[in-house]
Length: 109
Length: 112
Image (cartoon, rainbow over all chains, first blue to last red):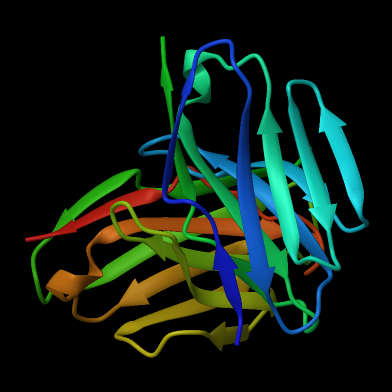
């Protein structure tokens, strides 16, 4: 069956680096998205990976390994405003989008 | 550029009352449109999606329905709300199934 696993919650310190992992088991694969969702707000798109490797976008980077069914989102130079939930979503072979439950990231000063 | 509008932002309704939430997209043609519900502290649950006018696919059987009367308009409805319908409702659009979805600001629905 289809499944996406992310840690429920993580805590990190302002200025540090944090890596949020996502593992998936799906029927086929056509890409993976990362979204950020602040409390009480809608998700906003962060990154897209379809090929293996690292995609860098400013302080945020996303990595994909299709053979391992694994992705991570790397956040550098953490700021208080990065406190949010981070959602991993996978496009299956039939183009259905499967969402993870999200990782709540708490940033401490 | 493309924009998505969703209203109202908050809504308080009594049990058994009807519901109509509207979502419109600007700046694109024939988008894929989606309705999600998110319970507090939980992930996104896909309710309906549409790939064209009058084409609605339902993911979860329930007392909600969706309609797409125009290319860039998506409406979520209910004839009689239940307490369990409370939640954060999100509309989203995407160019194709392999492109990222972009969300409206959401409607927080409370049923009393």
